[in-house]
Image (cartoon, rainbow, N blue to C red; front, top):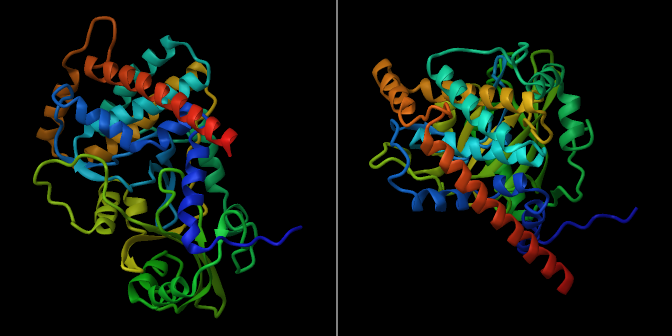
Length: 402
């Protein structure tokens, strides 16, 4: 086997751009997930047609892949929002529309008829309103979607060895260089060493219930991480850290370090948000996804703002690629319920009642969903499918020329 040679740091940007463009050709659903800014261009052009909900922390990029099992520091597991790069204090209607677009695109990718998409939107609104009312649905309950039950069962049985083999392909304390992990420059290695020496990182790592508060930590290995789709091109590092235990044994953990940039999601006027983008992401996570937010830390690396978190074996992405009609409807209800509960945590009774009243307006006798939501999803599907095909055409033409 030929030895892998990591790209020079100066060449990374071009490689990452190509990888992102390739990922976005794989399906319309993948294109939707990687084109957040296009979604907000449509929102800006649609000003005045979408109701203004209460100003709360929103996900900002609320597609189905950004929800999934998340572990708390105490080992509890729940389905929550798991990616908060775009989080802002904004209009909760934006999360509903983005989730509806994602689910509708997944339904079309599963060759489900348009009638199913209409039912999904109805059940999505029902689930969201149930979440606002404080209702819960255990992810392992019979009413939960099959994919949710499957991924939760998988999460509950996972241990460090599963995370290591999945992320770094080995349980030994080293990160093997290859297509996903690239060698660090000397400047990057020095910056990561300095970050690991910070007391804030040590407190983050020792925050898990079973670890001593005063446990020492040390860097075992690090690498540049080629990961994700919409985040490709930003700084991203994987850091293997050893943690001392009470019995003298060392435990290994995997730290994800991700650059935080300005959010494309529109924010509420005069919203009291941190100016620092990493602090904004952490604040949004703590409001929307407490399990994840309490395991995150804002920091600085190479003069850039970064979000730091320990990856847990239970943290998994919910992949919805192939759906039956019943599963599509269940998924729409369940995931919207999760989002509704995340929004409701931030609202008092009067605010929730007002927002629920707004959601109940503009519903026709034939569609139990607000007309503005249905029309938004239809328009977005049209624009994104056309953009997806044009993206694929450009990609094919460029590949032929090359």
